[in-house]
Image (tube, rainbow, N blue to C red; front, side):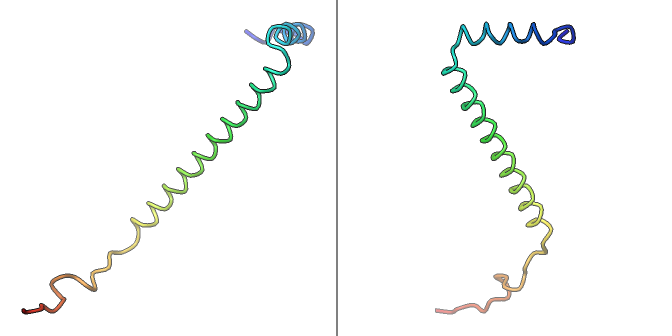
Length: 76
């Protein structure tokens, strides 16, 4: 579909978009899009770290050294 678009046609489309939106609005749109992608990547990295932490915690053996049955009873 887009394989038939050549460089002069893309240049014309770019000029039309610049005329409609202006450079200032396109610049803010680009920075907003960049910050959204950065936030998404950060959230994905945080989710991976949380997943790894949960996997590490689930692989550790349980510690049954101080169970309530082993503790001496305090009589009043």
